[in-house]
Image 1 (cartoon, rainbow, N blue to C red):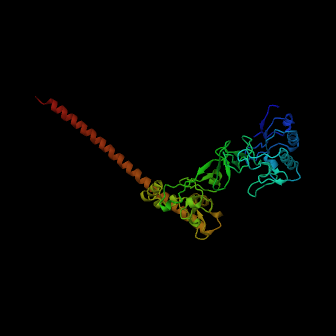
Image 2: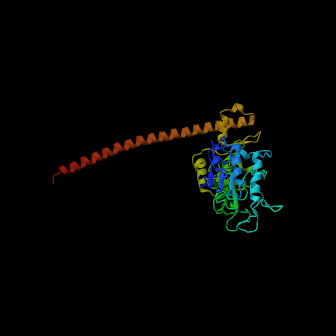
Image 3: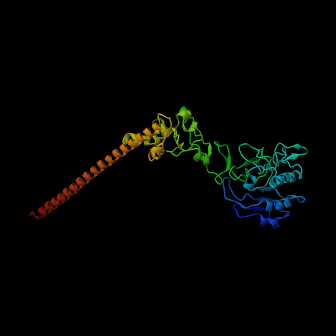
Length: 393
């Protein structure tokens, strides 16, 4: 135990904290991760108890010259601010431990103090550990403010000299410096996440300046996987991702975008307007489906004349199985019309297949006749050769 500097208990969901007793009064331990569940949204029930753990943590921070640099607390303790709780009281004592160490300046810029207080004046950088939610957009309660989870180095988090800027991941709720982890910024939700490990990112495929002839320009903004799928920012046809209406629909008019009002899926500008598209695949697909095959474009939305709501092909099919549950009579007429058109289209395709099969059968019969004719010609050639051999020289 006296050799342990870091203790990470991620995924130890059955731990109550009783087993941490040997750490009581440790002189060398610098970091303890009690987060148990790894990511925000992991709803597994955990057994970690404040009654067992807090007395041990107090023994680590109350001693003379404590080595402790970073504590990561369980999400269940940080869900809401309860000022009368034992945990909230411990956060106050933990911040006081840092105050007792005196002023610690940022090692990079040498200007900002990374302590909660400097003398009697509250420092602009804030406390080591937040004792309030701190932000309306996210609950930072009980999280570290200015220590990197990876290397445990201090930083004011506001300077970028030598790459000391700190980043907070909104998935694992840990703060990292640029040397310890790569975090990507999502241009849609405006949050940062550990790249690949916490979130998968996509690049916006939009070309917002294409209407002005700049087809080589690509937006390239990063979009996290949640914003791509939960907010339906992926074209349902070409599967490209887009960060905004400007990129997916160059008319710059939200009302004109080809988006389903039921499932919120949409067609990007290129797929919705193939003839004016710079995408050669979209143009080729248009000519194959409409010009050569004579098929209807099933990806086009249908808009109800009564409620003015648009429905994509998938939603039309889904509603078609339970038309009686639709409240809008206009939607019922639209779905019935779509089903009749689809039935007629299938009938046309079936007829086309039958005609192709008849042509194939006819061609097969002609091929057999040609084979028989070829055999007769070969036999005739053999007879002529034999007759020539029998002539007197």
